[in-house]
Image 1 (cartoon, each protein chain N blue to C red):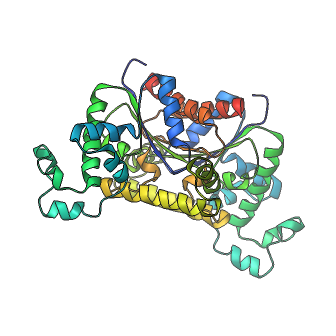
Image 2: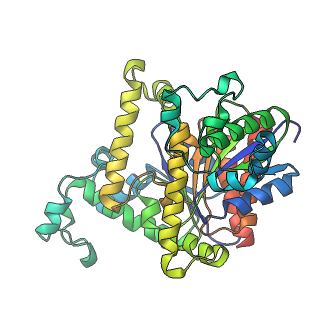
Image 3: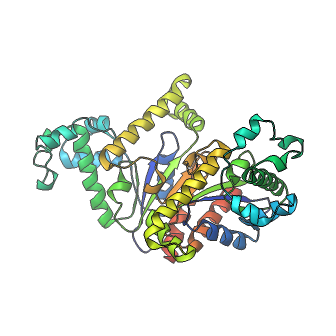
Length: 209
Length: 209
């Protein structure tokens, strides 16, 4: 493809979104950002990646407090970043990195409110990947070492965390169709099929519009 | 394609779903059912198509009453069909026709709870087409002779009618992602692009699964 392509993937826990995103990036030969954003944020800030790992995609309880006390000072060069909760520091850094990357390269990005952060840019395809709870619980057991009896509950809780994180920072509803260009049910699809469907979407919209 | 393909299209009012569905049927060379189902239902029942037209995709207020009085008698060959409200007669006839068609041919069907009616069948691709309210209001003005000042309200009302009809007969929530394989935002797409994306989905899933 001649022009820049950015694909944001929002995914229900256990829907295979990470794997699908990785496959798309490999097939298109473009960058892939998921946990990689933590490493980049850590490098930029000097905060330990392990500390950020713990705060990743979780909403803070105290951004509003920070705002009210004037500690939140993004526009003035992060002068008060150190006073913010880790979650908010990470969100702000990831926000900045995603915006910068979008100016210069094609990539696939998973989670991190990227669809919201890039909503006003052209050439951004916003995808939501979801699947039946049963399939997602099964995948959680197989890949995340979760007890079968607790799997459905764990999946629902993980989704709730992602939804809270998303709505906290974006003010939008996570998983609501209107935030996405394409919502794909991965229940009956292989990762390969899902990746090909999304790539076809990108090619068809790039070609004729 | 060697095996049968059925594509159900659920569409927000003004999203272009009818046009997209028609294009898909033309490109794949398969049948298309939208208002055509009314003609078929009228032929089967002897009721005037005009009468059914008026009742199309509207829920009845009295199916529950009919059920409680034992008038609803689908299993026994519609013996009491004439006693049911037109909406329910039409729903039952369309249900029967959609089921029968699905046994014998490939087609695209728009609306009429077809995704719910065919949910247990294989080779059914369930699509939801939606778009920004502004775009849909504009299309309503252009194509349906609706006053610009009333367009948004008219679009929302039409959606509400469809949602009520769907949930009344299916017990499911209209437009909820889990009921569909693919949800497509038509806001930035031409009908041709949307049709091609859905056809690619059909081809990719038919090929590798």
